[in-house]
Amino acid sequence: MPDVILPALNEAAAVESVLSRMPPGYRPIVVDNGSTDATAAIAADHGALVVSEPVRGFGSACAAGLAAATADIVCFMDCDASLDPVALPLVAGYVERGEYDLVLGARVASRGAWPLHARLANRVLAADVRRRTGLDLRDLGPMRAASRTGLLDLGLRDRRSGWPLEMVLRANQRGWRIYNVPVEYSERSGRSKVTGTVRGTIQAVRDMGRLLREESKS
Image 1 (spheres, helix red, strand yellow):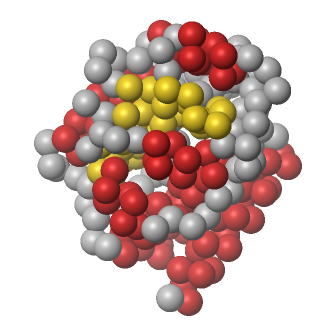
Image 2 (image 1 turned 90 degrees about the horizontal axis):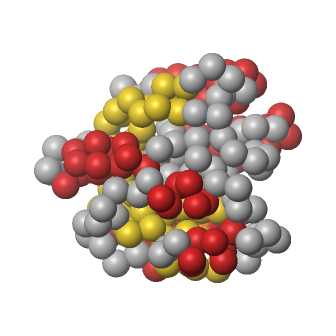
């Protein structure tokens, strides 16, 4: 069964809820990315493998989780309760059956769940990716599944907000079959560090814009 990598920074308000809804057989790996609250302790108390990654950055946390994973298939999702783990078998199932190589959850947001600035930024980014790659993607969402060895072979380098986009771009370069499947997206618990703030969204756009420029030169 898959490992589930959950990057976490001060998610004490959400981690228990997320772990309690993990599907049977899915092993949660909570990557504590420098939390100052009880995130790591709560995660450990609820059966997660806790990995410490003190170097801040979404990509740093994801890379640390991937290094700790051992399952043939790994999933990624946020640890803020905006995504429901019960959707993981839907996302991972396409990879397990060999139908696709990388499956991304396309977020279907409930009212108020997705700030307007983040929604617009994601829409522009997805359109740019479609134009540059020809992929039929509506969202580069954080819930995703792929082969562990395949992801390691991609050699992802970004350690900030560009990690999710770099994964898609490198997978596309390798000829991977990439697919979007709708998943419900709810209002997160606690304070957002990235897309919930204008500053975080701007930084993410910068990181991803840099990757797209590098892609166009390659």
